[in-house]
Amino acid sequence: MGKKRVLSLILMLMIVICCVTEAFVIGELKKANDEMAHAIEDLNIEISDNSAAIEQVSAEVEKKAEEEIPVLYLPEDIYVCAGLTMEIYDDCVSSGVNLEDYDFYWECEVGDCMEEKYRIHADAEDVGEYTLTLHVYDLHLSEVASARTTLHVVPNVFSEEGTGSLSMLTIGDSMSASTDWLSYTRFLSGDKLSHLGTLGDTEGLMNEGRPGITALDYLEGTLYGEPADHPFINPQTKEFDWNYYKQSTGLEPDVVQVFLGTNGLEMDPVGNSGSIVEIVNRIREADPDIQIMVVQPIYPSYQDGMARQQNIQGFEGLHGMWSLARSQMIFNLIGELEKELADYDNVTIVPAAVMFDRDYGFDQSEIRENPHSEVLDSMPVQGVHPSAGGYDQIGDVIYSTLCWLIDEGKLETAHVEETGE
Image (cartoon, rainbow, N blue to C red; front, side, top):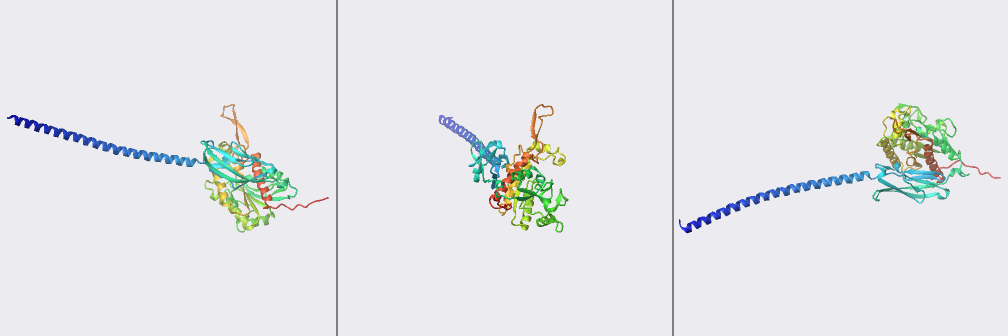
């Protein structure tokens, strides 16, 4: 074999080796490229999944934040009679949040913003109208909600010599059945205010309060779902009839008060509210010029009082009643009543719900912290019916509203003859 031929073979072998090596390298590079492409694809999927997860978490956080923003309710008007000390409670004007996570700030020219309430003791020189604004802040000092009402500080008109007598008839439940607010408001008026009705045994303190009755019962002539006679049902038509009531009883009140809603509570307030409004409508149809006051039902005590309520004779049926749910029912109902009655002439909301102290407005007693503890804890004996002091708080709101109606010329008291020497 010649030298040239050997060199040619060597050169060809080297070329083959280079080609094989290049093919192997290209194959490895292609494999690596494919692996990288798959890795990039997997990474994109992972990034997409993470983005979706982040978006989902963000949406849930935003939703939770929205859900936890306090829902506020303030009545359009609040009335305070000069000489009385009255309060509005943070836990009665808000719903859906833990109050400890927020700070409530009441802003007004009169009164005091306190830790858990707005408090005002009005004097005669404070008489007038004020804007009362509630600001709610989170713990970062960001305002998350606000509400506003008109505060009417009114004179104690019954203390004036020119104010005569006035008669009121209250259509209600156990909250109006010979309860303390009747005698208390009569006392505040200097006995110028007389309560009328077919129930009771003391002149000036009569009433139409029937324990356990609902607004629907008044319309249908029932009690606890069973037929029950009461003087508002016309025996001929079997319907609520205001004219029939007046004719059959001989009573002609100057003002009518509807104090219902505690019985018949549901989470959806439309039925209960609708029945209360229907009573108002029936009275207005028969007596369009009469003033009607609609009292908000009050909030229950917290759970300890609700739990102890079932141990009172006659209230065993309240076993298992949940204070939080009942409180939400009240919140929904007072808002619905305000909405439905907003455009009614001669109808005034009495804002008792937001001005009642559910912590200390019920009778209290001491019980052991546990069955064997020597430490005692004070808690409500029940959760629905107030103490005498609690009823007096309701009386303050009713009396202040009456004074406003008289001062505004919407209610006239009996004429007082001037006497001279």
